[in-house]
Amino acid sequence: MRPVLLGFFLLLGVMRSASPEPPPLKEAFARDFDMGVACASLASLSPEERALIVREFKVITPGSHFKPDHTQPAEGRFTFEQADALVDFAQSNGLAVVGHTLAWHNQTPAWFFADGPNPASRELLLKRLRDHIHAVVGRYRGRVKGWDVVNEGLSDKSDEYLRPNKWQQMVGDDYIAQAFAFAQEADPGAELYFNDYGTEYPHKRAKLIRLVKELQARGIRIDGVGIQCHLQLDRIPFEELEQSIAAFHALGVKVMITELDLDLVERLVWGADTTQHEEPTATNLGWKVAPPELLQRQAEQYAQLFRIFRRQHAAVDRVTIWHLHDGKSFLNNWPVKGRTNHPLLFDRHLQPKPAFDAVLAVASEPRS
Image (cartoon, rainbow, N blue to C red; front, side, top):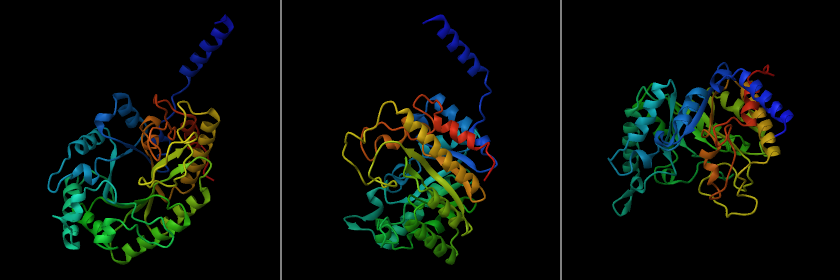
């Protein structure tokens, strides 16, 4: 390397090392909302990944280890080891925990819905739901801040209200109210949330408004709603998202952005219906190294999102990034197996991306 170039790079390194370290996300947005992150099991996290979580975030959401197939794979046989480890880690490092999730159409063992060779009755299914919620929520009473009581219970179809899953078909529409009532019994001090994707769009926004009002009319406590925000580059409905946040806040509930990521790779599936899949093509498998121009557009669009969240800081209680870095994202294997995606704020080497810098810069802007 020529001496002039060598000198330039040495000077650049000195300048970077002399620059003050940026504040962590949880401090930068402390006056606006809590910053959260999702993660898999504690055993899957390296020491460096654990340190990054503790540095940057205030709330942690276990991706799978509170779900029914992990906590009760067979009736009466509970397996809490991985959930216990994650809660212990969170508590020892000053992180709040959100439990995800108690009732869902996915990751629920088949035994819940069977009575020997026959389908379970409504009464048996409700008993199992209550027993499950009491066992799981009760175990972590006082240690988990809040629970995604029901996940993805709204239909994507314009002419349907609730998703026609086994809970809805075998119990009835009131399975949601029953689940919330059971969770309140199990831990009256925990916050109770309904979580879904696509509620930034008007057709699902209206359904969630209806659901919240119905629960409130029945005297069932619901403390917050989660807008997942699995978004796609250049296809973000910014205005509709802000309208949804304001509409839900007007109902008197907290609003949380619960599963935020921004997909760089083309896909036809919207939202996060994990039952849908696509065949690999030349355009949906991604790149080992993301094109710089896409990373820049991603950064700009993340910044736009966080400007909305800050404008709506009276409504938005938490913003959770769905997993720590690009290598951990479920978007590497959905809706196409084996693609390489770059949807988060940190890259696979735990380094901040342009999106991280853009988001952090928003925290210093005056609120519009």
